[in-house]
Image 1 (cartoon, rainbow, N blue to C red):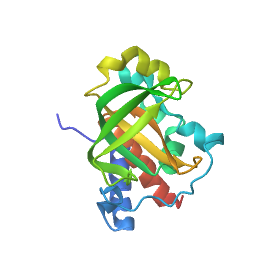
Image 2: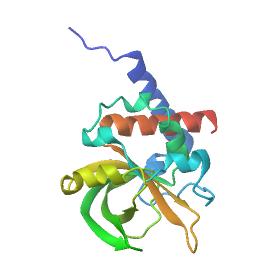
Image 3: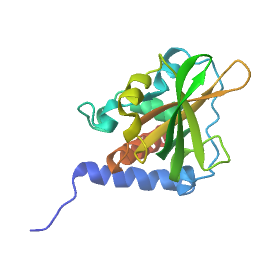
Length: 193
């Protein structure tokens, strides 16, 4: 019995090849590819909601997950991000900041970014999870088991009181997520948005 590729897989291959031809090659996803020109705006509104300093509970098997392609926010999150990159949790610590317990999470960059470039010259990104943020109850409940886990991180800087503040969303890592991110980029390039 001969295996025939599905029409969807043929479309993905065709779109990927077309995107590569249109963009001059896979440098779009390279480690030091130019970050998208995104304005540094206030952390509010629809764009702020995409980078809610959150961890998808399905990425930690705390909730039933759906296909990344079924995530209604994925397209907008990819297109609004400065960088989309796989990350591995190196450390999780609880610090006192202004009398409140704030989790400090060190995320090691893993491999080439899927989109853009992380706004750092380091091989890691440090994020803070304060009480009231979307990730706080998740981190508090699984704090010790976070170290070593990998995620796909979506990052964007927003205006802060003195300097820009890096905001994030961490999603389930895997080939299906990477393929969905690449599809968004490819379709966006072909449609001109």
